[in-house]
Length: 101
Image (cartoon, rainbow, N blue to C red):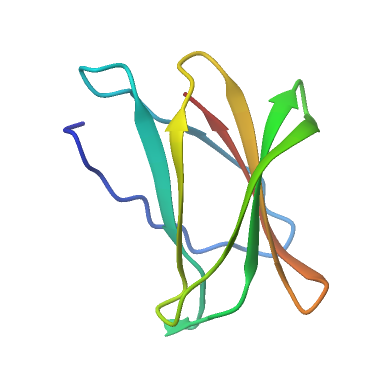
């Protein structure tokens, strides 16, 4: 993985995905994502980044509202830490994604 990589996920209902992200040479990394429905960007979705412990979200680290292209970004992320991203639109949870760095 180079200094920049994209990860695309097309979720199924109730699906849980585990993803590993490798840090760049300077030991920092970030997660960039896009929220969409059938290819159409969802703007105004709330993406929440939590530090995780086991299978539980422990502490809210950051929040981001998706732009007109449905995109969000979090970083820099700490190497060796487990994170959970939860995505909501109009109080409905759209997605939960576990990320280990």
